[in-house]
Image: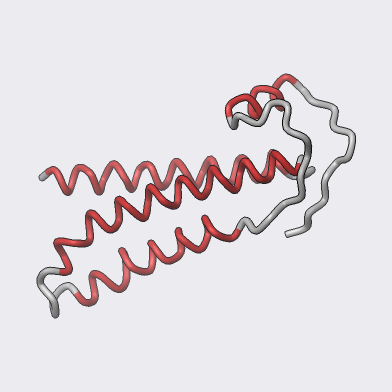
Length: 124
């Protein structure tokens, strides 16, 4: 990912709204740091929840009991890291911040849907 930023930003009302939602209204632009954390957590979560746990569950009966809580914790962590990375993009005033915002919105919606399914399954 490139770290292109626009040095003198011209903010639209939509830009101001997102900056308010992310609580970075008057922050000066900063460089983009690593954004890989949220993607790595999402990838590890998917591998564990959809490959490792189902494959090992028949061999180790108690692992199935841990699948739901583990998935919930990892989903919440991935959502938090996604929002953190989105804040970093907006703080950097990256020129492709709207495309990244749309991507993160899709990721967060998918994680919330999975979180709802996990909570319903855990509740019985």
